[in-house]
View 1 (cartoon, rainbow, N blue to C red):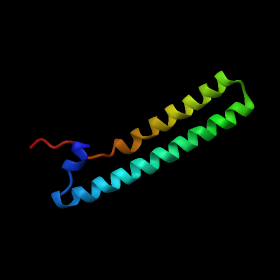
View 2 (view 1 turned 180 degrees about the vertical axis):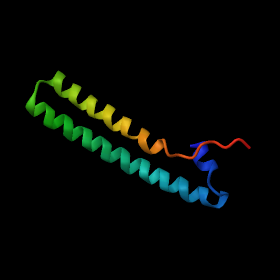
View 3 (view 1 turned 30 degrees about the vertical axis):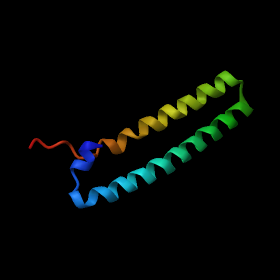
View 4 (view 1 turned 120 degrees about the horizontal axis):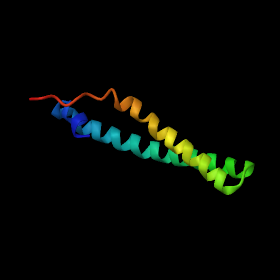
Length: 79
């Protein structure tokens, strides 16, 4: 976060912080709903241990996908 905010002009930081908070809250809610739906569907198709395994696999995959945009964040400059 420090690196990301550090790459912005000072006047743009409040708006970036607000946007980040909104995206974080909406994304967290949607992610939770998605994983709950995956778990519910998996429980109708298989035993609970397998259903939870499937859901955790999806959670891991979705978490790994967040590394893709993170790779494009600006690097810390050596000032």
